[in-house]
Amino acid sequence: MSSKSDFDVDLFVIGGGSGGVRAARIAAGYGASVMVAEEYRFGGTCVIRGCVPKKLMVYASHVSREIDDARGFGWTIPTATFDWPTFIAAKDKEIARLEGIYTTNVEKPGAKTAKARAVFEDPHTLKLSNGETVRAKNILIATGGTPSHGPDIPGIEHVISSNEVFHLPEMPKRIVIQGGGYIALEFACIFAGLGSAVTVVYRGDNILRGFDEDVRAHVRKEMEKQGITILTGCTVKAVDKNRHDFCAHLSDGASISADQVLFAIGRHANTKGLGLEKAGVHFKHSDGSILVNEFSQTNVPHIYAVGDVTNRVNLTPVAIREGHAFADTVFGGKTVKVDHSNIPTAVFTQPEVGTVGMTEQEARAKFSHVDIYKTDFRGIKSTISGSDSRVLMKLIVDGSTDVVVGCHLVGPEAAELIQILGICIKLKATKADFDATVAVHPSAAEELVTMRTPTARYVREAAE
Ligand SMILES: Cc1cc2nc3c(=O)[nH]c(=O)nc-3n(C[C@H](O)[C@H](O)[C@H](O)COP(=O)(O)OP(=O)(O)OC[C@H]3O[C@@H](n4cnc5c(N)ncnc54)[C@H](O)[C@@H]3O)c2cc1C
Image 1 (cartoon, rainbow, N blue to C red):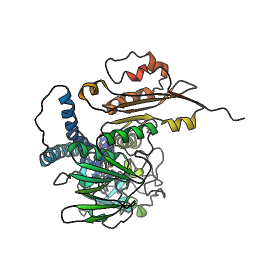
Image 2: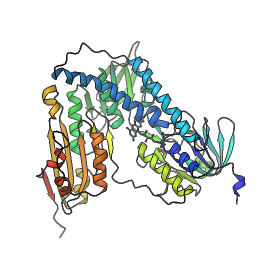
Image 3: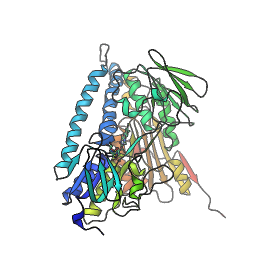
């Protein structure tokens, strides 16, 4: 058995993204000697090529809609123009600033950083691409995920992923986006707002698989109103490169010319070439992600994994929580489990989606009595702006206990609202608690506390 002196560090973290940085910082704060290796840029997917640059693009895109609305309110705005290189430079500057902050956050409590790729040599030894070899008592795998391109279709080399979309030299005037999940749809709305002609291609019957059916239908309708073409039940089966553009050939026989073809059809765990077989770490056979228990521990007791590489709930705040809980448990003397239930999430389409808890379909499968409260309306701003955008709000209630078990919103600020509604759902608020709350007027959110009559009620008879 190894003694402590056999090790260079108490903890080696592979990956300087959301989960890895949090774990390293907290573990170092508890007095552990920590080293973190990052092969690309500290901050990881979220900061460098995910949530943050994407949200900045959403803001850039949204301006065109604000300008349209402003005209209805009496503003005269000369023809506005958008300069892609100016925006990209501003975005890159901000991302570089955040990258610096992430690096400092790791180093301040005393953790060492290495800008290098790390792979396992054996269960305790990591080989770094800068030539170093490090022996670690504990190892945290926080290598995240990477875009999947799907089957190897002809011309796949012409297709970009979300990794490249943040660095295009020019804004595509026409873009084909394959995928029906949140990343594909967010980029569809971003480019539509910036003035591109956007076609979404998705193999399923409707976008946003896994979301409440009303949300799926509402978002699709809203995106189509903005001129986004959504083609379901088909796939891109080949991409040709012409002199000045590309041509996407679809499985239904259609062809679409575009300046870029983006695939956002899913992501997979970043485990390739990591040497996990040398460490003896088990995978989930279904998807190649790392198998862990409720404490993020793998089958090898001193090796843990957090974040997207475990493919539990692939969101930044979840990776952060898992990293924090790991550090508390292993170095802080507190046993902390992460609760993966009722996680509020947003989709930054335009309009936004905010959702927490069960969908109607899930609730009806679980409970014998389900009450649905649903409203679909034009917000007060739209009356004068002339926008034909509609808001959807839906509460799912367990009819036996009156507890609100799901809440689904599509409309302005849905992401902000769902954060607060997430607290209500966590606290198991009842519909009576919602009703007892006085409305804020005039607001869209007041609908959440003024929907009095169920729009649907489902009662399942007990089996004989
Ligand atoms: C376009 C896009 C938009 C998104 N938007 C949102 C959003 O709005 N909200 C949200 O909550 N989530 C969003 N996500 C998901 C979110 O980014 C991830 O869930 C989160 O980043 C996961 O954190 P992580 O620590 O598991 O991995 P990551 O943040 O991916 O970090 C892993 C790091 O490990 C490094 N690495 C990999 N292998 C090695 C190795 N062998 N050696 C050294 N370093 C290595 C990688 O370079 C990377 O920096 C988005 C993702 C994408 C792609």
